[in-house]
Amino acid sequence: MPPQSGTATPVSDTPLLRVREVYKTYTLKRGQTLKAVDGVSFSVMPGEVLGLVGESGCGKSTLGRCLLRLTDVSAGQIVFEEQDITRLPERTLRPMRQRMQMVFQDSYASLNPRRQVGDLLAEPLRVHHTAAGGRWSSTAITHRLNTLMDLVSLPRTALARYPHEFSGGQRQRINIARALALSPRLIVADEPVSALDVSVQAQIVNLFADLQKQLGLTYVFVAHDLAVVRQISTRVAVMYLGAIVELGETDTVLHNPAHPYTLALTQAVPRPIVGVPHHAPLRGEIPSPVNKPSGCRFHTRCPAVQPRCQTDAPTLRQIAPNHEVACHYPIAK
Image (tube, rainbow, N blue to C red):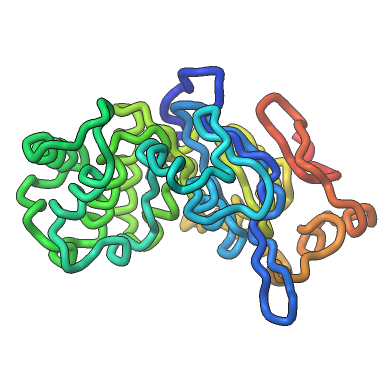
């Protein structure tokens, strides 16, 4: 996968999606509280691709589900198309779901194995009305399904087949087609290539990029693979223990990181080249989200920890244009 960041230039000065101090907590046995998402804030402009990256368990998938109200937030605000959807009742939210869709990680589990692909793709069209308020006719549905197959580069004969007859990459193309069925503006992709072979990953990421340019889509792209994030994202948000610790343009964050955790992530990428040194991994394990460290949440693993880090929690602050970091002592440029 060749490094190339960014896809399309945002076409509006008004954010398509705004997230303000969002929390998602779960109550466990014995009264313990797990903060899966811990005070996250960011905005996504129309036509932008925001890469959401971090280690497993950092809360990025939970946050992705919260953005679309597949999971209700515990506190905070989510504004989509200038409308606060945080507490909207399902009846009011349902028409808006046409404009925000999700592509899930498991391409097989997200498809009903007993239904043909054509039925799976037609279902959202039958559930939702057209832009004019009427129902989709049979002729219109057939035309739309054929168009979707063309968009994701699958033969139209695939509509009459079942999910188990396809490879993992082909099933993910079907999932992408279903997400596109109602012409959404925002797509949240939850690690859509992590279960695929490397060569297939590149094909699917290129498909996402081509669709973004062709249809003017906006993505929140959840991933743990920095190569994938670098290829498709306009900006990157790095998460650690439920919070964003660094946010900025892709080239800046990945090539000149300001947070020690982001630097560790970039150094952990395997480099199978003779003569290129391998950096030591981070010390220790990720702390439990049930019992997070005091002060900076990263101080128990930080190689440059200072006394202040153990007591004072840093907040996300701007250190350069379009570059924010939650660190008392950001890495010097």
